[in-house]
Length: 220
Image (cartoon, rainbow, N blue to C red; front, side):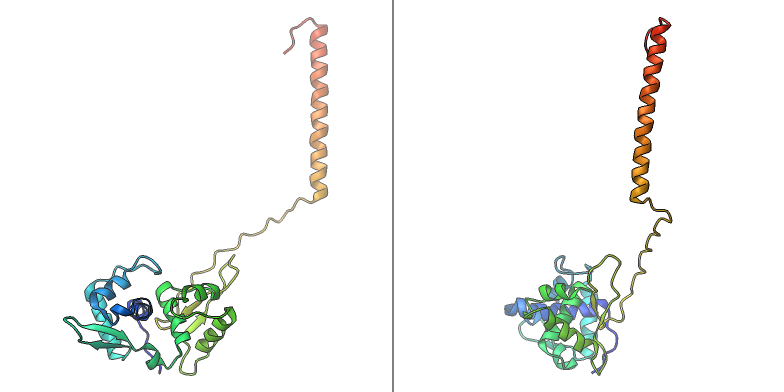
């Protein structure tokens, strides 16, 4: 299934539902209050949000219209569950990776493996790469993309595409290298010149001291 572009808050709601289903199964499906708290959580979130109850409810309503969220009326309050994997027809490993990116933003393959461990334990880095490649080549539309490697970074990061193509900050300009370089030989010559100047200065000082002594003047 091809989905319309979701907002940042909508992907955050989906991510929270998947996360809490695995980490807090006793309280799942979640109430609206629990969803608001999960969306505004200060840990394991990037960016950190300050969404209101009204905003989260609006996100839930749109996700319900797309069948990504299911509402249940058990107990005194409405509760919400995710229908993510079924709608997109993707395996649980792919859901774990997408959820991690929806909650924490773009990450390297190594970071994704570590941060998704509570949702799915990948055997190694290559297995993470395999599922990312499948999501990137998905026939119904790519769900992830590998971002250009940032200057100075050792690895490229991956980003989810449910909320659209991420804005890529322009790379910092690489400082131009100096047009003139001092070679080892030139540096040695400079040191030799400095040593010679010191010797000449010492000789001048000795001559001045001798001249003052001959003239009967006090040394300086």
